[in-house]
Image 1 (cartoon, rainbow over the protein chains, first blue to last red):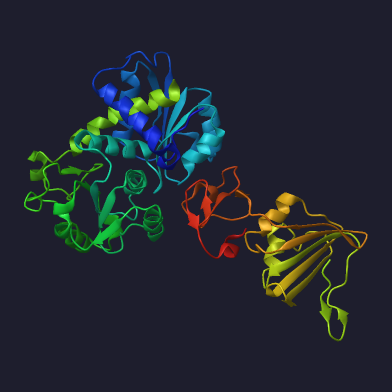
Image 2: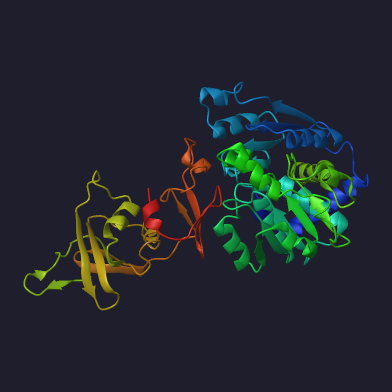
Length: 298
Length: 156
């Protein structure tokens, strides 16, 4: 039985296979009834719009159906049921489970108790492999992944999308540039691990100093709740804002990505520039999640 | 069997007829070794502990003798986490019946608590903590947290 829990488990070859499958799906080369008669369980113990809807859409486009748990309050978890028991029960209802949970490692636990495949749709500040795969897919649409320079801007301490992505990028000999407010840097252990794996990680005090060296700028949300008051948040957020002026003189193939939702990190005027790929990135989630479902359910 | 001698009083701790002697424990770690193999104040084994004993091999060391209990291999290997140079002597009828070193296991289950408060292994789920033993330290199977130092303080 195949699960997709962490980008670490996949390896370069498997990632390549999923991205190739997603590319084929995007060019309409897939069987729209591949998962006919199959049922997907969407267990979201945390709020989600994109991930939840795109997994539902992916399942529907492959001819399958889905069951969705609407809220934790309405579930047996509210009565104190363990996740292990919930997973064992739901395994009896569906053919695969997509899980989002606030605790790190929840998807790994679920894979131990499930009798059907489990896909991790985000566990606390841990892993979010489907987001990482669609990030890689979007980059690969514009350029080969090998040897590129990727800038990570924003909250790299708590952002699970950034953590997952750095692991994946380290497989492709990518140089990682980090641009973060003080206190929101990449966790020291993770930075050391990346460097030990041979990945060059360069820290920058401001975005202007490295923007012209980058092939990809990956922007993440700076969360207001990390700051003591609104004034200090706006002060930091404004100095990390991506504007059309900042992007002048960038490389020809340069692109801007963001896992969304965005707040003030990207000026809406950037949306009109050809380098703005974040809405395509979001749309790519369907093909990538279709490829993931096919991988574990067929 | 190791017999550590005191200049005035003869043997520092007396030999045992049957059981296990754990020798060459990193000095100061004897009580943690007992914790790691599940021997606490509520268990019934008869135990002798010598701590900070001179050792030609490792300078100073601790020794633990457990009467009438032969430790199994999987129990013994856990010790390697905090005392990699320890040696295990199984004693039968006052003689060393078997002597072996400790080997670091691939996984450590139910011994170390994950320091990450957000880890699912720190909840009421019906699982035991599980760490993969890697070159750099212990990696939590669930949340990927890496413990690189002071493993002792994370022992349950």
